[in-house]
Length: 127
Image (cartoon, rainbow, N blue to C red; front, side, top):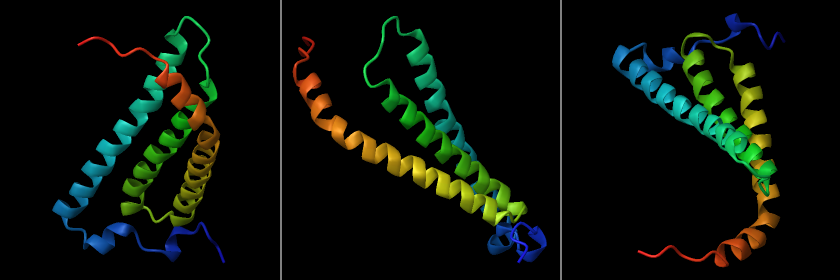
């Protein structure tokens, strides 16, 4: 079977009966979500580069950035498949997002006691 032959599938927009208000609503929502997701890794990169000193758990910030970047890419793919039925590519990207998500979640679990310990030692700011 030719998995990447787009002639074997219908674009997702057909499910919406190509109704402009429905297609447009999904495009606007997915685009807004993707842009928000893309801004988070950029913020993390700027934060890590501007910090004057080494930051503990730098890898955790990077993992979150990768995970969130993939989430944004998936929303862009949701827009693309409205017109171009590249569902196998979409599935591959979802698998990559799943891998990044699971890896981030698993790697964060052992970090939890350390973070709780560090944050309980921080003096609260006066009101």
